[in-house]
Image 1 (tube, rainbow, N blue to C red):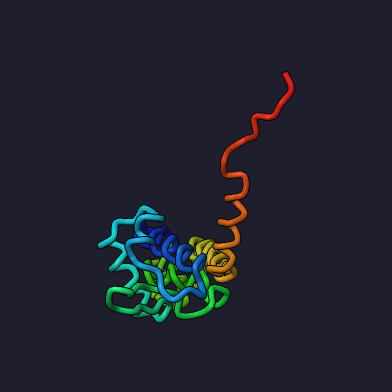
Image 2: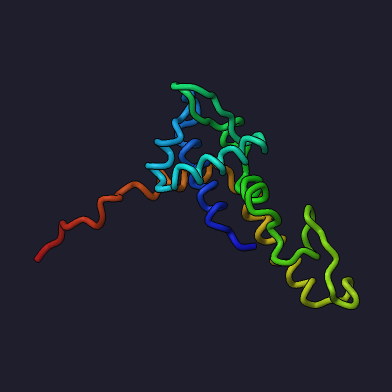
Length: 154
């Protein structure tokens, strides 16, 4: 699995929307500015996430986007799969996007066996982390953001 720039931007947009969960809607230009995402690119990403029923939108002057479900109910794996496709490093071990590989015997392929373990580890981690977890992690990293204290004895 390789997270594309589009996938990274999708997760950053989910963070911004998750931090404001419960508010009416968030304007796309606010998310774009806060997360430093090109507005037009963000519009495309949010439309894709809307198709996946991860976000909702409201049109008009007071329009914008919000999460379609509680942040605790949206896993990072769900977002990444929708934007970037399979989490598996090779298609022959993907559970949702399986394609046969070119090895002579899939059931005895050492490479496939290892890649399945890699897929399982990635999937377990990303399935276990929600947008709420991402928001909490981000908030905890903001504590003391000013940098190290200059209080020390000379």
